Image 1 (tube, rainbow, N blue to C red):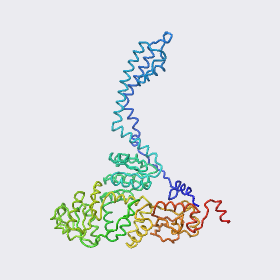
Image 2 (cartoon, rainbow, N blue to C red):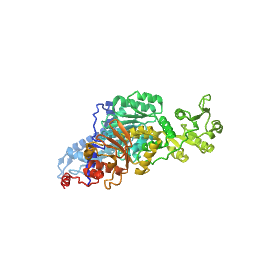
Image 3 (cartoon, rainbow, N blue to C red):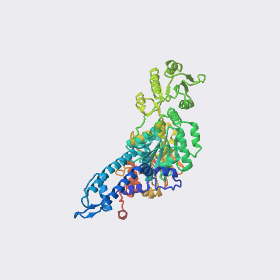
Length: 597
């Protein structure tokens, strides 16, 4: 009944969203970058010049001398060794193989000259091999060799790939996520240690990595910025100035490419937006917005957090943050000030504790949060929420422990700065945890993983919390407590040929399509989250809504449901069964005979 090979080859040829359009890129890698990438052979010739000349001279003098020294043949007549025989004898003598004397036995003079050849060749080879080993250990040569190898790997890429500038905690998280989605990527980072860690990751693809400064446009060109298959650039370093430089370079050299940049500075964010329309992710702003959402709509926050976590994420628990009362915040830097403004916008009172704070400012206590007297002045026992938001993990951990000792009922939000301390924060179990890398990675994943996911997440906060709770219950009932995969389906003649007749007759509906090809009375483990029709978006469309040609669907479900739906959209007999319940053959001849019968 089904023809899975037809569906498979259609996906290979066109992809899940129809034919892939290739873009011709006029910008090329600068000449300086090309020279750096091909400098290995010149470095070898320069460093090995005198050792190679020494070996060549030894071979030439040895061969010439052996041809000039007279010898005798088997009959005792005078003879000379030809150049071919002389070079052959010198070759196996210099390499310590030692086949013997040819074409005749050597005279005493010839044997004396061969003895000289042996010692000369040993000295020459020792000098050459020593120079070669020194060259192999030379840092400059190893860099040039790695650069040439990296350039070849990038040039061989044919599928669309992402260029990630910065392979710290955020880059690693993004790398694992996109690798699980089958997306290729290229990494550039200033730290050689971070690039070497690529070999320790169990990625499906061979990920090219370059240890270089991403601020240099030449390095970005080598890393694939000028490659026609480069799909997007992610500036994910820990230095805002580097991220700004990457954003500026892409905007000037490849303005058609999407750019996603990370920053915690509002000034840098404003400068980034001066170059085109990059997507700027500020984890401080994002955490504050999500905490505000968790205060007023816990189910909505739970849904967004789950969908942004990526494949394999377990459904997070629904929190119950306090919506009334006073909060105490330790750490009043950029993060503390932004979060305090967000909490005050929700009508909450915030008392900030910081050693460098202005004591005359309202709602601010100047002092060290670990001092019990300071916490007494901040009136922590009467507070409902506590934020440990300094830039030191040890300080934040100690503040959480001290705060809970004074008030066990506090809602605790914490900031984690170093990934090595993840186990310590997990042991304390804060109610809300800010990990800069995870916040940025979730935002980038939502932007690039599936085209319609980002739009869906933008529309969810506008809905009621009851609506979000119903969506979560539906997802949990169909797909379980683990997020499997999200994908987009375009209903058109190119990507869904079996659906053409049903779309023309107005008989295609999501409830009919999401049925099992084996037993149509069983629904597939998938849910339609969004329907895109032109410029119109419908969230969680009903099962009986009429689908039209050109519609796009955002679905979430298990991989088996995705394969079953792809088969139904490409095989006429399968679609006939899931929609009507009638068994119909897939082949053209059998379909004609079936219709006549």
